[in-house]
Length: 591
Image (cartoon, rainbow, N blue to C red; front, side, top):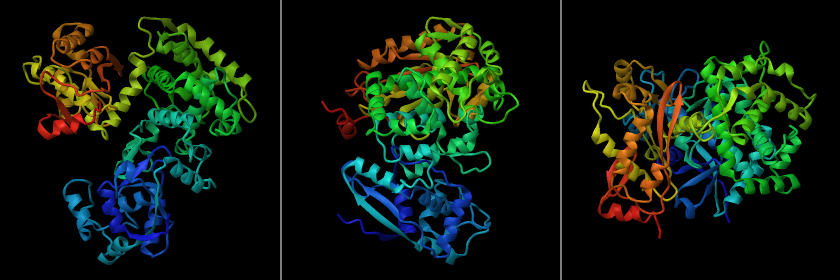
């Protein structure tokens, strides 16, 4: 097997980048993490003709087809080079002149990326030097994903640029590591499909308010940093994943674990007794079940906090007032107390303000270890927290677990994911027209069936979602604000407007409003079993006082129809399938 390095020009690699040939596998790859200064140093090295480290790619034609490559090592360098070409940042006040590169110029004119219009720009000679620069590149051919993750882990074994948690994750593909990685992404808000195009990476990467890259997630807006659980630096070093691993292990082992680096290292190592034990317990418990329970608990905690105050560091200032450093220890106890009440006891919060009041100065009531938190200290802290808040939780039908506030985080992630996975998501502001009549839009209700059918026909592994109460155009949000007197909540380029306003206009309850939609679905020609499954997957979510209806479209084993017609999703559009397209889509569902 030959893995001899070869030179590939920046111009050639840029073409591969924009033609979707460079892939990122999130099983082992980090997010984009370089600062502007680090990117500028790389560009300066290229302009000076200095060598830069080897780019390592993996070719897997059996999985992706010929000519496509997973990036094993080089994602930060590729991003630095390509975003410099696309004017995302400059060097010493000068920008790459896109007019000197025909391919980039055409993409800019097509609106693929914005450019600097007035410079100042690098000289034509310097632009040519960047495009002609030869990147030392090795292509590693393999059919085994395990080989790729092992290579990645070995490359990063020294850990000089990786945090402790990133070192644990590097080259590890256990079920536990996968659960932690995916859950952490959901909680941060950078959830996505497992393999992305390099062009899509900015959407799921994290920037800070002090250094804007145009990434999809701002660290200060995550629950971790906004509530003072972690610092921005700690989040960028993946300490949120460390907390998730800690919580998941405590739940699986049915006991608070001691918070030590050594134990977490063992949980990630399947050659240790601890690593094998956590894998067995995860299989028995169920990864999907555990993921749902942890996300639901986080959603409720987030809802309790944000309904009381939208102030930054509100949780930290409540539990540890006057001391501006992260609250990892108190948060562990808060989460585990909520988990016990919400998941194990199936109780629901009755008074958000009562809960936050009970958490006042919680840190003063806790035991803290000298070097790390012991099992005994953690058990004490959980019991103290539980005792303080449990009177503000009540038995309710249905319980909060699996409903309402517990779905808020899933909803917010749907809004973010829709930017990359557009066909799986459909957003509608409601069922009333936005003209002067404010009548029910019967055509829109009927199109729901076509959209539902279209989402289900994306493939046997493709679950999708329809949301009512979300506008995807700013103009519609402003119109609704003017007509109905509500303040839309902007999340990930969408505008939450709720459906309560429409129920009020129709002079019906929210339950009656939902029933109108259910009735249309019941009387439709949507094929079975899709119709029955969708009817059992209606939920309402309340966020910032606005109610959104969520309809889950479960993945199907067979092609679905509305009467005699089959539909499919292309981007955000729903189209009828005919002829060869119908045949091609039907092949996605093997008998």
